[in-house]
Image (cartoon, rainbow, N blue to C red; front, side, top):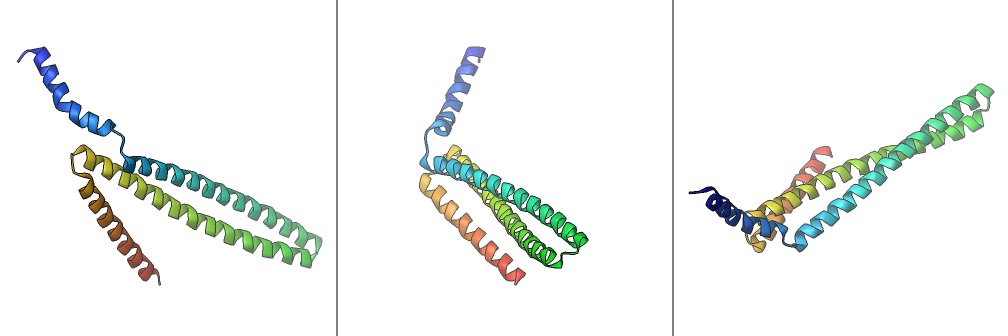
Length: 149
């Protein structure tokens, strides 16, 4: 086989899979959009954690200053605000962790769908596999919740 024939054979062999991977797919578009939304939500949660942490630092400093001045009422007020800031920080961290998991799952779904599509599996089978994966993940999440309680 000469060189030009080998190149032509390689192009013809690779072109159907390349065309399939390049073709628009609504499921892949949905996956990309979901990943984009998850990233934005994760950034927002990270910002919330930073803001809550800054507020906690400010309240802690104000509480110490109030205690130094001997104003116990003001110190108690700042202590309550500090408790609320810490609670907000914990909640924001939980949200951030959940968003990281969602982002990871969405990336995995997109990768799996792309792989299934590239391998030439029919769309129906891809959807069935996605439903099975989601069902398994829900059961796994329920087991985690039961383990925590």
